[in-house]
Length: 160
Image (cartoon, rainbow, N blue to C red; front, side, top):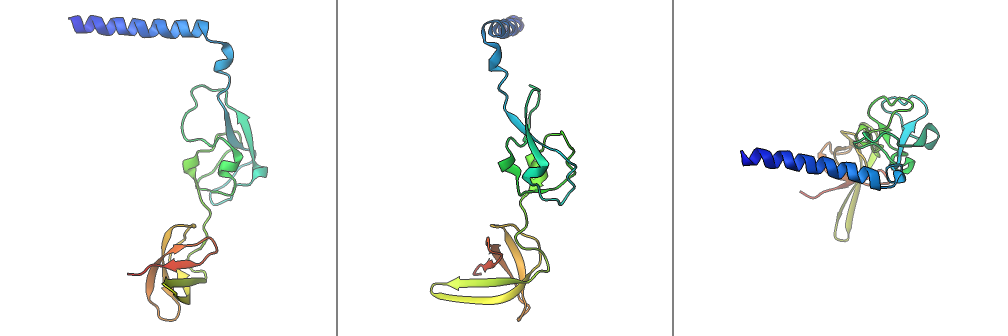
């Protein structure tokens, strides 16, 4: 029975603390909730986000939570995975990096071991962003290799 009373008392203490904080804290403490990025036009899946399609708005809803974008620079150049509607916050999980190499395109495969470097033409078997590991086919031998996508669109092949 003692346990129930302690729980009720702690509930009253918590409620009193919130009430006192609401009285004595200045009103502008809650005003600075930050900014959120919203589209100004409809953005469809696969479209790349540009600054002209976006705007930053002040967050006024205290219940807004989640992984929404807080600045345009955070999402500019990323690709939408789903339809984004004007005036709605943009979820960062609904975006992806733009692909550096695309499946079926022509790329350069590079293998380095010490001072030796071997280069060959290849075709990626899957889409990949910079830093991702993708599988690619050597155009001359037909061998399938795995490698890391570099920023310039080449694939650095790993040794087995």
